[in-house]
Image (cartoon, rainbow, N blue to C red; front, side):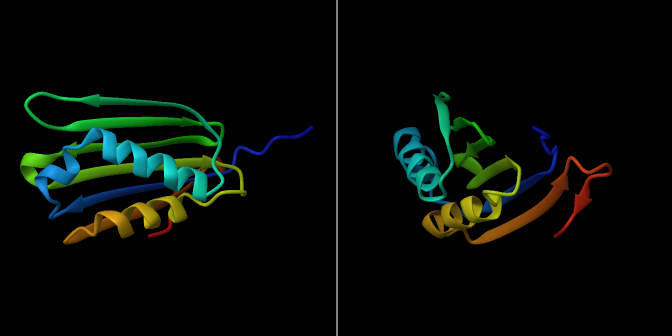
Length: 123
């Protein structure tokens, strides 16, 4: 069987978030799992870490690759990263669904095509 190295990578920097919301590791993890399931991703593991005095990192390892967030509640900032290999699942759908829940004031998204040679920036 021949495997493709094709993948899509979406990164988002979002601003203007409520401190309590993006400092709640349990809630953010719950939403990430729900979205991954909605998007038919295969969850292999999820690891969440709550920093003191604030901040959260959550890494979801997927059969398709990964979905992660890192929060800076004191700045109202969240960094989102989602990469999927192959053509079955578009990480844009994952990030869009997560943004719909978070409802940030500002959002900056970059979409990359990977595994085809030079990395292509789509947006």
